[in-house]
Image 1 (cartoon, rainbow, N blue to C red):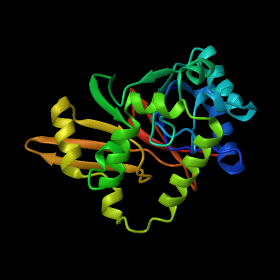
Image 2 (spheres, helix red, strand yellow):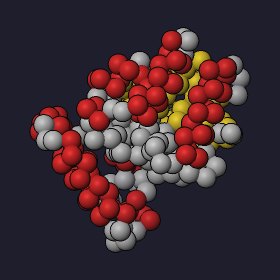
Image 3 (cartoon, rainbow, N blue to C red):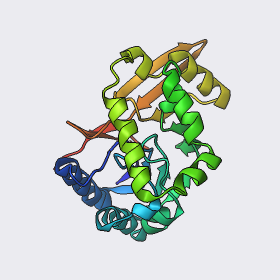
Image 4 (cartoon, rainbow, N blue to C red):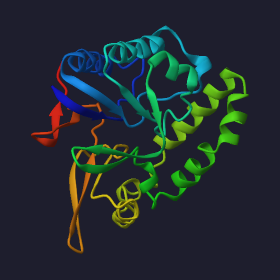
Length: 241
């Protein structure tokens, strides 16, 4: 059995049948192989509010709830695409919501978990958008708008983002200095995050320390999950269907 598994950036959408099939296969594998699961944001491609729950999204919640009912705790952290997931959906899924930065302990080591977009500090537009949209006042106001209007507005924002070619690769990636500052502030040597779609391990030698940053995979081509057990430590494992 695998003690802990970390995933993010699945971007589930009813029209994307391949990613849905990968997720279905992952859930079946997790039921047999995993002791606990962390989802670090962007489970859905987009989420406009819990009043938009339909048969498809309720089915996703039911799959996750089955893990929880089986004794496999599931922990969820909001991403930049599904930060409007609320308490109604959390109740359907049975997961435990996490704050935007969360410390856990694996073995005897403390590890910092994050979605990751807060570390892309050279992307000024995104950081401004993030600051506004994560505010509780904004969420309350936005969710008070009619569902049809919210969908239209979010689609327009997404369209502009897709066609915006002004951002450089450097702007869309995390900033090393920001990562190092965060890790030293939390007094940890290992971080796990998603968002950038660049899975792998990056190390930062700082003084006498070796800081480690594990990035989670998206699920578009050859998705990987990050696993942990007491004998192997942290390692990547490919999702198969």
